[in-house]
Figure 1 (cartoon, rainbow, N blue to C red):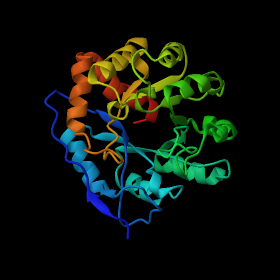
Figure 2 (figure 1 turned 90 degrees about the horizontal axis):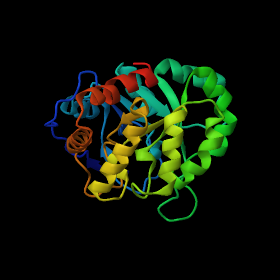
Figure 3 (figure 1 turned 30 degrees about the horizontal axis):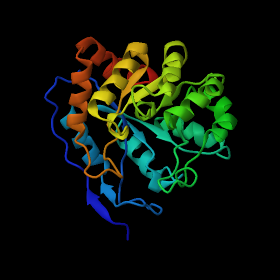
Figure 4 (figure 1 turned 45 degrees about the horizontal axis):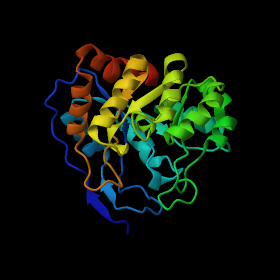
Length: 280
């Protein structure tokens, strides 16, 4: 039996959150659905708990990213999408996925596939079960036909290396977790900023996964927003697997808003940008 732990508590942000805000990087874990091996205890984060978290944050909309322990089985994600019209989904698949399956996923609310180039914690290869960008090259025409995006989790140096070829695919590319720079002065971040200014590139301001002091993470956020505020999204990454102690999503949102300190930009990033990208 898979170990289960309570989902981390969420406090209400002290900052005003604009109506219609969207958390663009979240997960659901539902014990009704079988999962594969996981190197961590799975959180009790069913749709109902997810909805309560969003209500506390003031984010009626959210994007669900396929949780790694479910592998390529979309059942848990599709179940949540079927029961909450305020959600969109990001799934994983390789080139063997049928066109009919992609069409059914689109009807269900999925709008992207995710690809991973992050090394596994063991240091050997990619995260187990992840799908790399070599598969994206094969899937790109089909994603383009659906109007979908490709989401990428990779270190900034790898992102910078890949972006010239990714931009040629003529797809919206979304980089996870602030694009994972080593810090605000990471040379790779400058390359990412150039693409952000000029191409169809998006970045999720998910603060918790960048291991750097707050002052450095703030500078990363400020540089990204300054480069192109119309291509920035906010995501919590709730319920924070592999993080001890887990962050408080309300505190993460406050930090983002404090560093932004601009109500007009907050509405653009939290409401307008995700509505345009995900079709809310």
